[in-house]
Length: 207
Image (tube, rainbow, N blue to C red; front, side, top):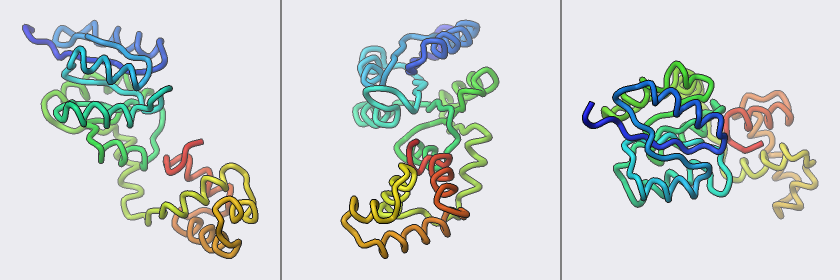
């Protein structure tokens, strides 16, 4: 092809970048033009190379993939970015798609879905891996936690008791109990530990 799809891979794992490079090198219609090992580098490399497609890891040092994508798309609104993650959390998917990701791929499926996703996004489509789509559908009707409830859930996950949470957030213990009750109900959790596990799995809070 005269104009191969120009691709940038941003991931802090060298082995994963090598794997992506090998997959792309086998395709006559694609070319890897840049690599980055953190979010800040990804923004700089994007400015320099202006790739057609950017493969962006969600969790990276210095600047995470979400923030790097926002920075790139603020400057280059036409940027087509596919998020890569080991994580199926539906909140993460939604967050990424809301701020302009064109695709979302699980790293475990790169060998099966990477090329198809790159070509689809380059052709103007949005692509979600099947597992990510399932997560979104599964929780589409769930009641979202409020920011105040997320604060409480984060402290529950850190192992804090109601009294400690109340002191840290400058609220009463009764308010904490009310929020915990609401959190358990919204997440369909059996207890606090279960709620924290669901929060981490779904990407509501970070582990």
